[in-house]
Amino acid sequence: MLKSLQIVNYAIIDKLLLEYSNGLNIVTGETGAGKSIMLGAMSLLIGKRADSKVLFDKEKKCVVEGIYNNLPKSINKFLEKEGFDVEEELIIRREINASGKSRSFVNDTPATLKTLESIANMSIDLNRQFELLDIQSADFQVNMIDHLAGITTKVETYKKEFRTLKEMQAELKKLQASESTAASEYEFLKFQFNEIDALALMDGEQKSLEEELAILSKSEEIIELSNASNYQIDEAENSLSDSLRNLSNQWSSLANLNPDYQKISDAFINIEAQLEDVSSLISSALENVNTDPSRKSEVESRINTLYALLQKHRANSQEDLILIFDQIQEKLGNYDSIEATIIELQNKISALEQDLRISAKEISNKRAKIFPKLEKQIKAILSDLSMNSARLKVANSVSESLNTNGIDNIEIQFAANTGSEFKSIKSVASGGELSRLMLAMKSTVAGKMELPTMVFDEIDTGVSGEVAHKMGDLMSKLSEKHQVIVITHSPQVASKAQTHFHIYKEESKKRTFTRMKVLNQEERINEIAKMLSGDKLSDSAISNAKEFLGITA
Image 1 (cartoon, helix red, strand yellow):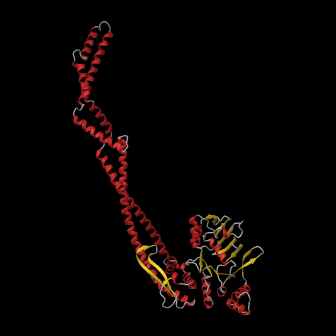
Image 2 (image 1 turned 45 degrees about the vertical axis):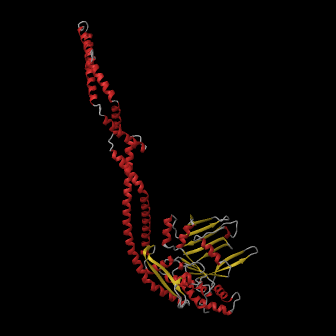
Image 3 (image 1 turned 90 degrees about the vertical axis):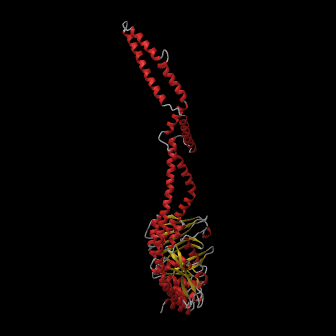
């Protein structure tokens, strides 16, 4: 409920404080006194744009502050989710400085206009005669039917799952696009993988091949050197072995002269033995020298293939190439994973679509059951409001494809006169008809929907007499469960007020100010009498005003 509204420095309002009651609040006053200005200030609290033109005093800032109490649970949940403090009262404030810059606050915490708009959707229902009203909105029409059918929880669950479906479908489309563009890349990576894999590299093979090729390239030189070495060690005249043996014998023959000479002889014998080891090493090395020309070609071919791959992949070694091979293999695995993910996601989407179709069908059936009841109730209310021939019809086109509301495409249609064709409310209802239709529809659903504070701005324009009385009765009935604020020129509607505000202009030498006060019983009698007969009060007007107010004495 809107507990109070304070307006400072807005248009012709220097300072105004309105404290509303929980029931039916009526605002009356002469044309131009500021009723619409008050509504304009209120619109700032629901996130509407503003500029410095609204400033009463260009040197001061404009402040509009609304205090709400008895908050719906939905508002508190929203505040908690958005990180705002939750108090017993909700304070929304807008400030506009001379440059037109606006600041918004929720419980003294800075907030965006979008946040104010979200809160407003749960707190204030603003109805103006010449605006596109809620009842013309497909969302409102479906929401109203769902409340009357008692399926709002089921519908919210459906909508949540439908959003999940759309997200999954978007993800699938993204994956499929990725898969399509990656096809050529996959083939290229597969070629690279096969090319490296076909080489079948063994650990350390590059080093081994390089060493073998170096030996093969020098094989003739190695053979010649081996043969020459062995020849010099054993086969040549005066070979190294013979020379060492002779020297050893000569030193041994002199051993009786000095023991050291025998040591020299023994040393020559040791050297001879080492030469034998050298000869064995040379023979062994010679056996391992491959003189087959085809082997050299084979090694050269393999190592050239390896070098080509190293250059192609900008790798410095066999180890780098193996690392690249592993990376290619991992990427190929990811492509396989995308394909598996697509299949899995397609299966999930199919299952969710099936569940949603079952749910949408149940929702559609329950909605259809409420259509005749809604049409009957609205027709009865419109008849009371002197629209005896007016009819309402709920047109529904059931779709094969799912939408945010299920499989239904609902439009409430209206025919004002007997024989008139049913058409959309927007295209056939006049201003006065639209006002009464809106009141009838919201009266019908008020007990089912958690409607916020309801504000009606001169929706009774063009309506008078008994019809105006009945419109007032409907508003009074609405106020039994909801706070209702009505700006009116109708004395019949004004007479239904629980709290009656009178807005008026006060002029000084320099400025005109908007003022407002709550009327007592005597002031109400005079105000309603003026609304009936003009500024000059007559006895009959006062008598009629008392009759409207149910005052017998």
